[in-house]
Image 1 (tube, rainbow, N blue to C red):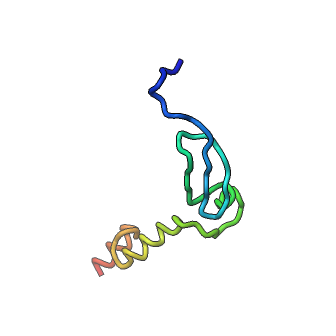
Image 2 (cartoon, one colour):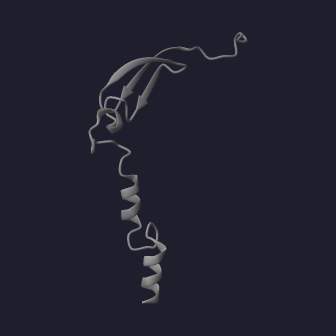
Length: 83
């Protein structure tokens, strides 16, 4: 049994996605904003290459550290250092 007056109110919640999709669920918050939902996520839609705000973090890291030893196999870096 729950103790009285110590738990937040659990009620309807509006979820708004960056793609424009909106749906209702239940939460302790009144509104939740998300970047990806089941309507736009490539796993659920089957579409690859969908525009996602957080996509490309690995590629961004690789561009940022291009020319350094990060992300490259140790064998390649050792050959360059020796040769």
